Image (tube, rainbow, N blue to C red; front, side, top):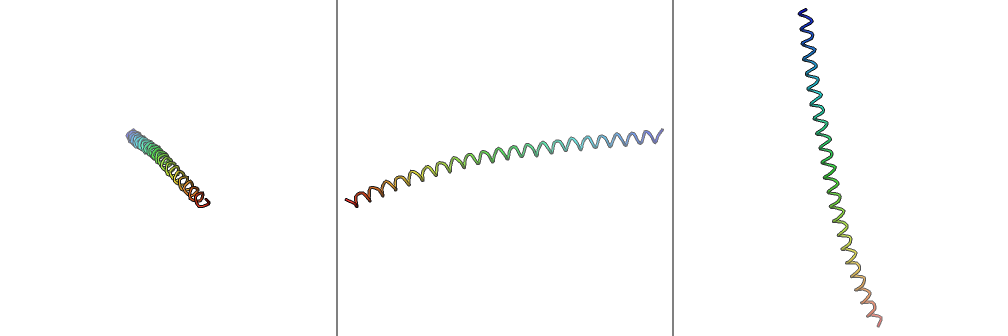
Length: 81
């Protein structure tokens, strides 16, 4: 009877250790998932900011090119006269 009690005690202790390990594993998985969500959100925000900055820069360059082209057109027009 003592051997059976000892075996049951060991089995119960092993089950508790496994439950704790599973709980810690779940916490780790949740942290990893949460971290990847945070990282994804930060990357998306950074991409949006870069898109906005690049769009503004391109728009500014287009305006500058248009002004230069208009200036060249005026110079060429005056040179023909």
